[in-house]
Amino acid sequence: MDKKNNQDYLAAIQAAFSADVLAHEETFGILNVEISTAKIHDVIAWLQQEPSLSVNYLTNIAGIHYPEAAGREFAVVYQLHSWKNNVRLRIKGYLPKEDLHIATITNLFAGANWMERETYDFFGIIFDGHPDLRRILNMDDMDYFPMRKEYVLEDATREDKDDRFFGRNNNEL
Amino acid sequence: MSQDLKDALQNADPANIATINFGPTHPSTHGIFQNILKVDGEKIISSEQTVGYIHRAFEKLAERRPYNQITPITDRLNYCSSPINNIGWEMTVEKLIGVDIPKRVQYMRVIIMELARIADHLICNSVIGVDAGALTSFFYPFPEREKIYELYEELSGARLTTNVGRIGGFERDFNPLFHQKLKSFLKTFPKAFEEFDSMLARNRIFMDRTKGAGPISAERALSYSFSGPNLRAAGVDYDVRVMSPYSSYEDFDFIVPVGVNGDTYDRFMVRQEEIRQSLRIIEQAYNNLPEGDYKADLPDFYLPPKADVYNNMEALIYHFKIVMGETELPVGEVYHAVEGGNGELGYYLISDGGRTPYRLQFRRPCFIYYQAYPEMIKGMPISDAVLTLSSINVIAGELDA
Image: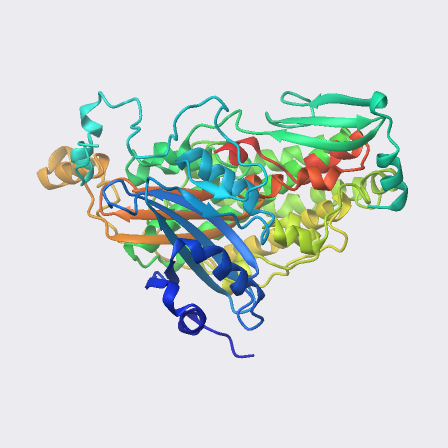
């Protein structure tokens, strides 16, 4: 059986959603595709249903905070896996900090439920349509989203761990 | 759901429905997490989970630690098989920096990881016995598990939170005592294990108790992103070691056992068979252990020998640089997965070139499949819920991160 590779996947996604593929690259053998945020749900649903692609497994969902990227401060990364072709791919969507809304994929993968709750808990990203979007690992009455970069760990008085020595300078946050 | 059950649930008199706590501290939760059960007599109508009691913010912590200091954090994910977590993380960093790992290191890693899998599965399966009321079977495999811990001790100095290995290999080679203990383990383990197996696997009481308890279909298990023995018990033969081999797993001959019904008995049997297969892998790896160095040539991550540090300025500088995490790292995004004790344990690492990760996410199999628990126990008696919980092997450390 001929197995499809990353290029085939990219070509198929581009053919079906040409206007919504904003960027793509391949890192360490995994295809990364940036999709316009409003379309992510549709793209994942299509990937899942398209028999030749058969992306059947949701590996995980990750949130990322890029405080310096104006207008695209938050990223939601869906890591998907097609067992038929043994291809892993990442679908990325970027959100501006003023509007942290993205459609839920709990109707496509039951396992997305807690993954989305965790992303909400850590970053405050709101998954529209999620059946039960509450905090999961932190306390319900917590009033901030701890994985955002502006919340530094409490050892900030230790100068040896100052960010200046970590190869980046984001003290102004 | 059967028709009887549907009727029973529909006809349940609200006055008879009781709300009870299963956990946070309950002898059979084996960790701290809470289930609030609504029960009609013995039947569970619904349950609601609370997790996060031992959330230690590993992902946040990791953003403030040099790469070598993250290995001890990974110990505390699934602490029943910490070497798999350690080595999985080390391989993630190796993927990022693009280093060739000597064949000997890969085989040594396979031996350690499979020992860890055996220890992990032994705990889980003997605890299923305990929760079914068979306490004796818990004590039989423990001398053997103790031997595995002694092997860790020879290699790393620690037993539970092993912090084994370094980025690029191991901190030392297998010492003569390790060889001796491993050979003795390989000799005594099969007999002791089969003795343990004979107590439960075909035991009529145990089978009656576990068959049909907490089943999940292959479709639902896939939709819930199950992985590891729990998924294989439902009949899906997905194993990261086969699907995307790492650390030379492609060199070894082993089978991936699968179940049929996805119930507690199948999960037990899948784990039992995996222990046998792990033993086969260890034997193959140990008998073909290649000659060579126990570490890759990676001066940026390996501390120079102490004798040099005290007598040689260059070595002292390197020692200091490594301890302070002043190592040049490439920018990039890596995902690396290993087959952990409970399934696909993944590390999603984003490096911006700084000395700590920009973002590190752990794909923790426990966290992902535990959400299916209410669905699995609906309509079951409480005693089956207990068995189901121990057989899906939820480890609180991995659940909460």
